[in-house]
Amino acid sequence: MTTASYQVHSALEAAELRVREAGEWLNLEDGLIETIVAPRRIIEVAIPFRRDDGTRDQLTGWRVHHNTTRGPAKGGIRYHHEVDRDEVVALAIGMSLKTAIVNLPLGGAKGGIRFDPKAYSRAEVERITRRYISEISQFLGPDRDVPAPDVGTDSQVMAWIMDQYSTGVGHATPGVVTGKPIELGGSLGRESATGRGVVESAALMLAKQGRSLEGMRVAIQGYGQVGSWAARLAAARGARIVAVADVSGTIADDGGLDLRAIDRALREGVRGVANAGVGEVVAHGSDGAAAVFGVDCDIVMPCALGDAVGEREALAMTATLVVEGANAPLTPAADRILADKGVTIVPDVLANAGGVTCSYLEQCQNFAHLSWDEDEVNARVIDLMRAAFDRFHGFATSSGLPLRKAATVLGVKTIADAHRLRGLHP
Image 1 (tube, rainbow, N blue to C red):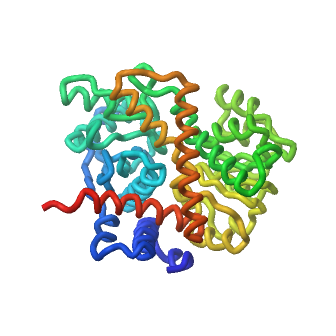
Image 2 (image 1 turned 90 degrees about the horizontal axis):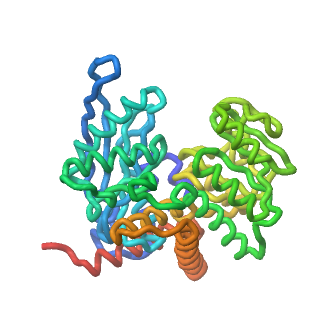
């Protein structure tokens, strides 16, 4: 099946088709492909809660365990007004592939609640979180399913999750969640880990091409936790951040944006990079954020939401390397266009795996009741990412497969091997 075949399908259908295509390439035995495609369980729950004014309201939430053959389910919890069941399943499939590619002893999961947390008070978000966890707590646990932050959630939400679960079991259980505050057993280095992995993936791919980050012009879509850290870490390695974008719009400076000035403005309460007074404002508003993809540069790092790069954005790109900091930021049509243009794409299941890698290290620290310093955590993240990249690139080279397909095939092969070794009960 060609990449073009995916453009008529939803994100979930495309994810399932890619897994089936990988299984066919591997010539997996009858039934095993469907076993890998099908989620282990899909939990949908009603979340009744009280608003601050005393009225009763209700939301819907999901938690999906896609594959747990290689270890406990692992994946973030997303709070967003467009979250739905299919999106959560598709993201859980991606997590299964991601943990397999990085060779972590974990499975894949994802969770989400369909609402905009910015439209609710902090107290309401806490009540929503606690009710959601009370509904799914029987499926959670350090050896069963370990959530983490995702879009719309943060370390405070993870702290509420830990407390709600711990209250239910009768003792403090730090290992039930990662991305926690440091004071509750969180790991140093977690905040920067995903952005660090994105930059390391870029550097490793450039090295294979006989280039380095030094002097590279980088454009970053999304200036949240992932994108801002990717910008700082890439700049620290000699790259020029020539454009960044968020919901406020796109700013650019071919000489390199002053990231410290941007960060200072945001800390002082400025709403978005386009209002920071740095660089040239290329376009305003959330629609204007897409203008970042047309800025003349060498590397593009999409670090916001999925499907951010469509046909128009792909056609406008001048970059020769795209490193996917977000989950599924390229539509299938964009993927095809960039491939035809000869653009190298480091797929999300590898490029943004720094976050789950650091989450795994947080679990290790929780299980061992110890804490590593930040330099040690960062070094371990880099070591694991480098090992995963070498394994992935070696497989892509030996198989002759395009990078995205090679990543999917490698992930599916790792999961299939585990299924075969464990056998089928009864």
